[in-house]
Image (cartoon, rainbow, N blue to C red):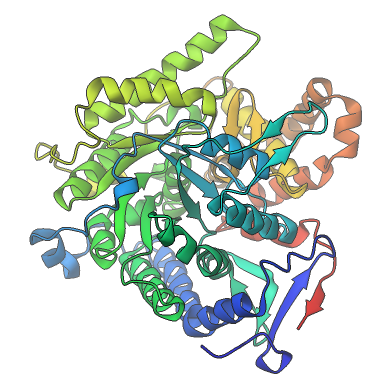
Length: 543
């Protein structure tokens, strides 16, 4: 692999002037990432263009989401994925969270089977956050990660037994503006995966584990094929055994729900399973049907996993995975234990238990939680209803899902409180994200970018189609929205304190939320639209 770190090769690394992170941005690591960009950057751009063209055809009524006729032989014939690695055989409880140092230690020590370290939706992509995340991942792999809390005096260290580490890089749609090659920013997914693999793949294999990734926001099997090509190339360049890089794919777009067999097939030598991502899936439902006035959703709180379209999607995931020998991982429990109200806490935990009971009875092999306090709750439910480490023997031949089932619009009401909740949560999350915080506790739930995406997309949908609120009779208009935003900011000033609101970035968050929800077209991703206004000082070029 040729070196791309010299200026003559066109690779610039940009830093915000904080910690140099020289142990991450080594010449060898930069050369590896630059090679990935040269090999696959064009293909990523082409696939993103294909996404946009397909959605445009759907908006014009020229195409309908459906199972692909051209890949029917893949769905019909018998084949299975590669055997699961030993330390991914038990995935009853997976905990997710950002690559913050203290939170990583807590997650690895939580008693969960798997920790998904998230460089994507729960990490605001400032350059300092991304580099610190890579430093923390490297230290965690080598079991030297530690944190001393100056305020409490508490020392955080790894337990003898920790969760298996899986890393989620950013999605294909995002770029990393601090790494530029040939005048273009490198795809953020290649930066995140490339740096992690370069520094840690061999060390993980030597420990008896392996380099494991969670791949987010795929929309087609062609994107899965691209990821497979990237990882085959990475293994060759890093001298790793074939198939040593293993992945789990999040089925969090409605387009991907129609191609689960094909996604598994493209990654069959390295895929361990599929995960059902909830909020992003609903956000994708809105996005793909943005032009359809018949597809306007009710309050997002009413779009539960009991809605027929959501039941169809998750049960089809179980059936598809188990037919191919892959694990089906359930969705997130975002609740945070409520310490000062025992009754409210028990009601929240009851919701978690009911949700996990549905998943385990449907045949899921594991589930997600966002807080260490929920690990024992989820584990208790799954262990009570599973006699083994998985349910691969439950083939769910009773499940028969059609395109109409997946496209069925959730039923319910649209209310003023639902609109206010989207505003209140969306604006607060965006404000935190602009400050560089991507994992935000709001109203006893741990929220990430997916919550803000569905909040602003739903408001856009209601305005775009002139939805009427069932309880007040008001039509949702830009004027009504602006009035409610201002009222909610007054409420937040009371809840959070005037000093906190004045010191924060609420004015920018308000403007961004209003801009995204009243635009003529629905922006693809909030995180892409807002990336340019993150606090990231002018770059320093490091040759």
